[in-house]
Structures are given as C-alpha cells and as structure tokens.
Image (cartoon, rainbow, N blue to C red; front, side):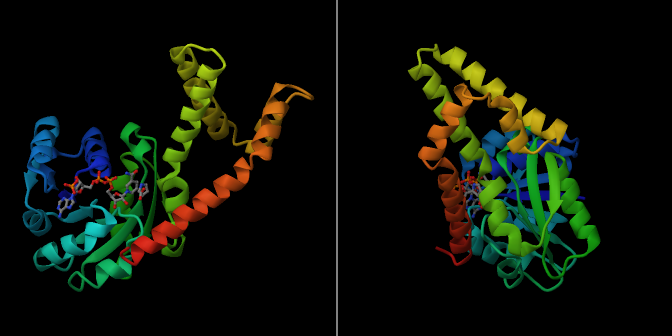
Length: 266
Ligand SMILES: NC(=O)C1=CN([C@@H]2O[C@H](COP(=O)(O)OP(=O)(O)OC[C@H]3O[C@@H](n4cnc5c(N)ncnc54)[C@H](OP(=O)(O)O)[C@@H]3O)[C@@H](O)[C@H]2O)C=CC1
Ligand SMILES: O=C(O)[C@@H]1CCC=N1
C-alpha cells in the first residue's frame, strides 16, 4: 500500500519519520510539498520521493493531507481531479470536517479525519480517528495502523474532534508551557538553569510514568505529595488563588472554539 503525505511541515514530517521508523518501505512513500528547499531537505533526510501534489494523489493508495486548515480547500481543488473511487484520503488538519472533504472529492473516495500530536516524533503520540460517511472497517484499520506507528490511537465520533483537538492535539503545548514556567521558577529561586531543567524534565517524565503505570487517579497522586501544612500545600494554595484550574478550562474552551472556527474557514 503506497502512502502520500501532502504538506511536510512539522506534523507532515512527524508522520513521515514515524512511518520510516516503523519500517514502511520508502519506495512506497511519497511527499507533496510546495517549498523546493524543504522538499530537498526531506529527500536527503529520508530518501523519499518528493512529487507534485497531483502525482501524489494519482499514484498513492492513501493520501494524507497535512497542510494548514486554511490551505485545505485549495489543495483539495488541486488534487480532486486525480483522485478515484477506492482511494483513502486522511486529513490531519484541525477543524476540517469529513463533510468538507467529501464534498470536494469524487464519490467512492473514503475519508478519515485524524487528530494527532507532536509526541508522535518519539513514538508517544496520541491520535484520535473518525470515519467519514463512505468509510469501511478496512479504511479505519489502515489509518489505525498508519497512526499506530507513532503511538496510541483512539476511535472517536467526529462530533468529539474539536474537543479532542483542544485536549491532546494542542495539549503538548500546554505541558511545555508548564515545564518552561517551572524551569524559570527554579532559576528565579537561584538554581542553575541546567539543574532546574533536569529537575523539571525528570519530574514530568516520572509523574507521567506514575499516571500511566499505576492507573491511579491524579487527585490521589497529588494528595500523596501534599504533606499536612507542608510545602506542596502552600504552592497549591497559590495555584488556586491564581485560578490556574479555571485558566486551563478557559484555555481549552478557547482551543475548542478555534477548531470550530477553522471549520468555517476563518
Ligand atoms: N503541529 C501540530 O502539533 C499539529 C498540527 N496538526 C495539523 O497539521 C496540519 C499541519 O500543521 P503543521 O505541520 O503544524 O503546519 P506547517 O505549517 O508546519 O506545515 C504545513 C506544510 O504544508 C505546506 N503547504 C502549504 N500549502 C501546500 C500545498 N498547496 N501543497 C503542499 N504543501 C503545502 C506548507 O508550506 P508553507 O510553509 O510554504 O506554506 C508547510 O510546509 C494543520 O492542519 C494542523 O491543524 C494537527 C495536530 C497537531
Ligand atoms: O495549533 C493548531 O492549530 C494545531 C492543531 C492542534 C495542534 N496544533
């Protein structure tokens, strides 16, 4: 099965590199990318063929669209004449619905919507997938195997996609923001930057491993750290005073709303 990736920016390259790591034959992969210097970079780095979007759409069994949501209409208009029934189009774009894509491709082309995230680069991705209306089990299984090469995959109803985008799609950015803030706090408290960075990164990795390996609720894990009248309780009181929990809720609501707006082309 050949796969084309159209749009090889951050997420397109993340998908490409995952497929290569997972052992997909490079001669079964191709890339459509509009910037020539980026195309050359990918050819050198992965030995993958960079072709025109039309050639990619004509030749590949599966066409993964990884351009910005705002570019999706133009790319679909460009490749639609090359697509034919039996092919699978996979969109990784935020906001763009399967309806939007299905209305622009020939009948019989199956569409699957995916929301990945960047930890896929280290095979710890979280991808959610939703079928379009002409999609069967074999198409979903193909996308599941595509995305499983870089992490976990969850099947969800498409109506949950905007919320999923706000939580796991954008999620790594919130975590990096917290990490960055904690490192700066360490520096503020007088720690060397390298020490602060090592402390924070390992604390994040250790906490994530506890969540995954014990399956214990985060509230219980937090309580285990919080000694009576101790340091953690003092810190948590400040986070509540500064309404950090409410800020997280508002932030993710804003991301969900932005995903809905992208669907409308703004
Ligand atoms: N980054 C992330 O964490 C995630 C991104 N996504 C989704 O992935 C998609 C891509 O995002 P991201 O990788 O961050 O964005 P990037 O801007 O890094 O990548 C998009 C790439 O597509 C190229 N491109 C634009 N138009 C065309 C075209 N007509 N033909 C071929 N290539 C084209 C762009 O080139 P140029 O720069 O010259 O325009 C760019 O290299 C978005 O839809 C986003 O919603 C989903 C989940 C997570
Ligand atoms: O910020 C964005 O719009 C994309 C979608 C999810 C993560 N990055």
